Length: 158
Image (tube, rainbow, N blue to C red; front, side, top):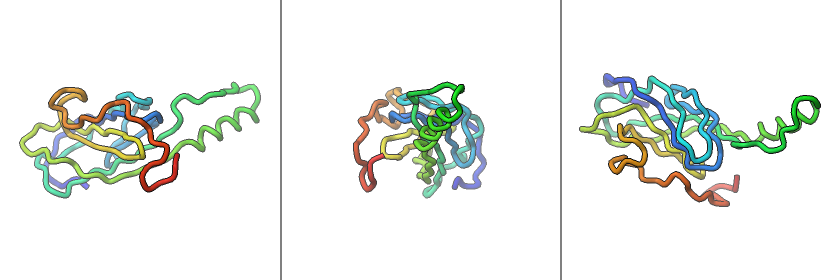
């Protein structure tokens, strides 16, 4: 968890490097208010506070839900049984995930909230950088379009 050092509030954003939608996410319980489609940026929220002074061991808990981005086969609402079968299939593809990650050292740097990078294999990276993704000084250089492995290390395929 973040330390008790005084802090200033900042924005909470996400960058999705996967083919799944990020239906919702939060950082230390602070929610965003936007879905992030595959290979997109978004989220949007206010009130994530990084303490003014970074200390070793600082972490942030990110909770998120993934799901199919563009579901096929929508049957309409006229036939309740068909609709419920389709909706159940979509719900079964959703996954709730949570991960506690270290905040990178931001000593002698201005902080601007938190940006969460959602990566294949249910991994994430975070930064408090004020630079925009893609700027030469932005600390995370991961390409937006990452290949999705068939099997993730240490897990079964999704």
